[in-house]
Length: 106
Image (cartoon, rainbow, N blue to C red; front, side, top):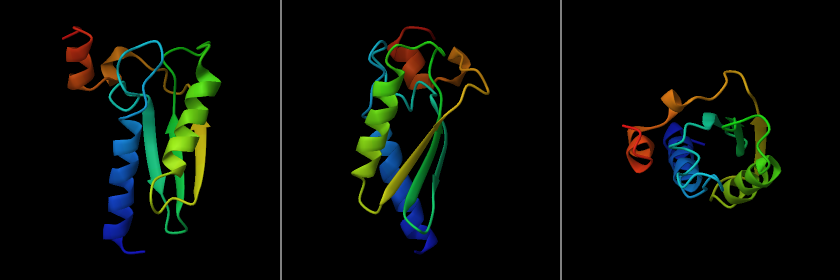
């Protein structure tokens, strides 16, 4: 794969993540700052390191599974590996300006 193809797939992954919403907050998980890293490899694997707004989130399994399923649908992705981490711990400073505006926190 060329670097341009890898970049295109990574952009498609970001667009997909922007359509996945935290069930308890009306903002997508990307703008919430829950996605720490996206690594798309030439062997067509999408490795995503993410967190949750709270370690005891009751929707954790559903959210991780949704990321697995939706990113797996991205053209060019053959496998998805989601790693859930709490290091660093999420806080509102990780949110995008759009998310802050959406939640009236700006």
